[in-house]
Length: 321
Image (cartoon, rainbow, N blue to C red; front, side, top):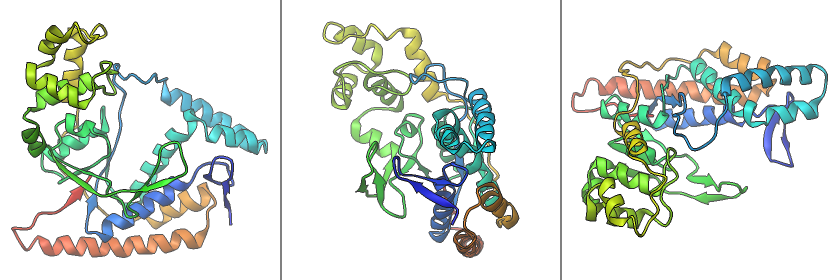
């Protein structure tokens, strides 16, 4: 056995002190999707908007620097330092993204690198009817106008509580944007105005305004400009300018996306998968081989299922992003 659990932070690391849970997790997830007759498309975030309220650095240069530092620490035998670097924000997440793309490519699963937000790209694929649903926990999917959103869609039907090593039961949820807007009595433009009042990744929101009050204000005054004019004595709108309002509206209503329509799902390149698991991380042979065998079998069944469906015109291929 060449991997171990680090007790102080409960992160599963290999002998090179790098996290490996994402690799097995992605392989398990793909097995789950194919077993349910779903062809998934993965979408990765592009560059952050200038309005993102989370302060970010030059992630690529930070990653390149820490990667060299990590390799030096590992070569010198300084495992505590290598572990600290491997778990740092600058290294860990970028490395997980890189290896996830590498594994997806090796498994024959398509993915897209969005020019901006992943949620906006997912929404566009559903709008264009390239896919049927966007599988995302982020409600920004609705702000980007995604017609159909799935949440809590997992095999285990449980999710880790943020900041705690505790899991809670979850129930899959299907959200239809058109129906939701009709029930609220608002349109897409007004939904975005509500989000600005409540708070998004691009603006922190107005103090003392939550979802219920935001909906009430928008229904009463129709748009954000009218809300600011009519409720300025009760709420502090000083951090909102017309320029910032227009910028946020543009991000959600006219997002930067790629137009892509052709995707293919292929058999895994077993040699490349083994290289990532064995040569790069020195992981157990039996554990990966068993899951790869199941993956191939589930892929064949999924492909056969949709191949048969093509002979039935009324049927539609189900895809998930």
